[in-house]
Image (tube, rainbow, N blue to C red):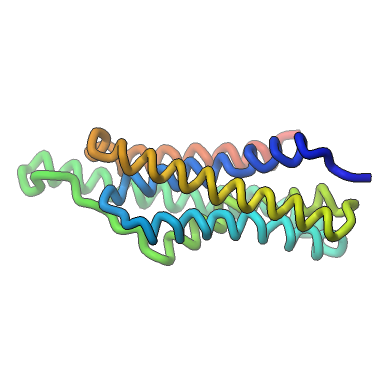
Length: 196
């Protein structure tokens, strides 16, 4: 039994959406982001979207029943914390601007810690893909998960490039957009995980 190429491609694109959306907010928040950092961020998203299904595939047979119920909650918690932090930062900045103490929105720098939290949070649900395809032979499973990783890298990179271009028009709202995206994806991950 194997997975057809159309299923692989559609699954890869659907698994990439969260990472792509979060990376777009990175491009909005850090409008002066350098090319190397854009590639690194996109690579991290792709790496984790590849790595999580691999982990799910190999440990799933033993631990799936113990961990699968917690996966949506972990992703929800991590992204909700990022969302709350972004919202607080945006509110502080807006208050400062209103008082006249800040001419332009402060440009956020996406730190390495945040990069890893984003990559983990947006890929934690990909563990379930590993669980779902445990029946595939190892070689085919790794190819499938590799396609997910590469697709995520490419789409995340394109998203951050587009967002960087849009940043000049959305700079006053970048922090709020980031907060809403993080919180929205957090809720989406939770609902997909707990609803039948």
